[in-house]
Length: 341
Ligand SMILES: CC[C@H](O)CC(=O)C(=O)O
Ligand SMILES: [Mn+2]
Image (cartoon, rainbow, N blue to C red; front, top):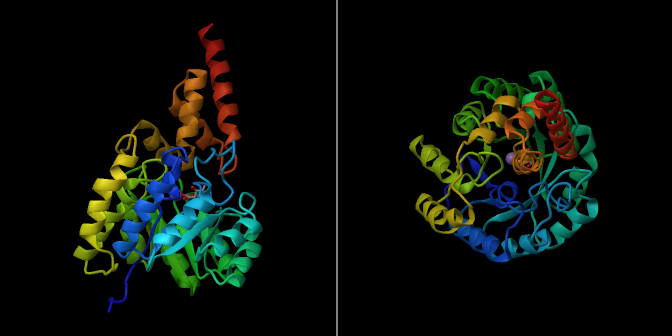
């Protein structure tokens, strides 16, 4: 019999990692990764477009493969793992959620900007009606003070979320900021608390451990750091660290290392690292999913991608405002032309 898990891992490479590869997952890749994750006893595998169900578009990036086909493939090879989907109300629809449930997704993670939990009740309710486990996912958590975050988390709890996540979308939170957020949520909420980090400031692991110390039991990771920006907390490393701490995830470390090395590494065009742009994202508090968009815009306008990211951070641009990246790039280019004239 499997020992009960102290920490429940959701592997997000097949969703968050979609940003890192321009949403170009193939059916073969998703099948191979899901099968190996299932065999390693990972309990939840998230599969969707990087921006969640319905994200495939010019604005966010067009998927190579229909995400429903990818979800179906993951479900078909998962014997014990449950497949999760992400949904941003306004991007994904009720119809998308029904279809995902029909083909076997068992968990719905309903994501909103940290101050906009009130757009999530219909989707959380529908997920519950469909018999799915529900998660409220408060993105860009660094942008709200602790009291506001707790207020929004309580709203999601009141709508029926089984778990509420602090999501450090920009990889901008410092360990003490994670501590105060998770501690306050633990005091005020009765549901599970989760943490989703990004490694732009090399703090994803430290932040995850602080979150666990303060009572988070649901943790996201991406194998080989295959996530947006510099990636997420690296799942196989986290499993090793938690084992050293005497915390059981139920996940097989050797199988995860083999999967990372043999199947996931070849998917990455180059190894994940904290390069200048991802570092600036953490520093300036910019959405990790903006990375490739900003790099493309920098090329188009022949300017420094860091200038775009710094300006996006100043303007507090949030998910869904990807069109601002081009606006900002074109303004910077014009300004620079005038200065250099
Ligand atoms: C745009 C959705 C986003 O990638 C969700 C997420 O993983 C995050 O905010 O970190
Ligand atoms: Mn993320």
